[in-house]
Amino acid sequence: MLAGYLRSYTTALKDKPSRNRPFVKTYIDAFAGTGYREGRHVAPGDGGSSRLLLPDLAQQEPQDLLDGSARIALKTQPPFDNYLFIERSEARCEDLETLRGEFPELTSAIRIRRGEANAEIQDLCKGDWRSRRAVLFLDPYGMQVEWETIAAVAGTKAIDTWILFPLGIGVNRLLTRSGDIPESWRRCLDGLFGTPDWFDEFYRVERTSTLFGHEEETIKRASKDTIGRYFVSRLRSVFPAVSERPLVLSNSSNCPLYLLCFAASNERGAPIALRIANHLLSKRME
Ligand SMILES: C[S@@+](CC[C@H](N)C(=O)[O-])C[C@H]1O[C@@H](n2cnc3c(N)ncnc32)[C@H](O)[C@@H]1O
Image (cartoon, helix red, strand yellow):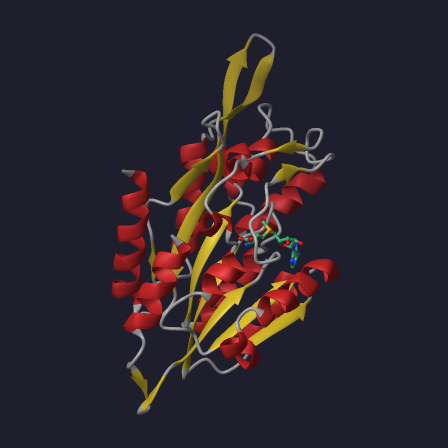
């Protein structure tokens, strides 16, 4: 899906002028990995012993299915003008350097930054984006993407974003049945949604009168659907256009793990960006 979007994007923007010059087009991968796709594990301390989340991805597959996002982006035709790969791990940055060597014609267009994704992206968004356009891919393992980052991206009015939202792997696990949520988990959810209002969306407090006074019971009303709809509504609060039906990525037991969401940030470009993204998303849902 990423490959499909990137191809349509660079094709659509090929000759689009910005003050008589074509836009400078950048692909930004904030959690770039190595260039090859790996099996995902739930880390110990993430609520279980280490286990493979998407075992179907670990099976022998044709080579092109094993390409990671960085490699997919570098294969895009027509190409982007620039590629920015952000990665926290030193070893993975070295793998990305090797990947750069495989694309000699793009060597000078590729930048690899070792750093923390949120800090790097927020910094990048402070620049002048009037003659630039970008596609950003946010592919964290878990709940690393901060709302401030998403708001900063929307604020550029220039960066279209694909984001893997950690529905089953993160959020739903922190929403306890009782509504008794440890302070550190609440902060984590506040940081992800950019507001504490999620509590009222996901829980209902029922008050009943008894012989001895009033009793309160907190009932969880959040389902994976409502959590997804709420995140889409949060995206809509900052982006001019958002795909209403993100793609649900499930494991082999049909348990939803992530939502693949799309948001376009430039008002003029949004209708076509949204049309392409929705077309790709609906094809995968058939
Ligand atoms: C799910 S993997 C990315 C996979 C990649 N998109 C692909 O398709 O191959 C997440 C990557 O983000 C890196 N990472 C995790 N937290 C990070 C952070 N806060 N800032 C930057 N990179 C981070 C990890 O080292 C890991 O390589």
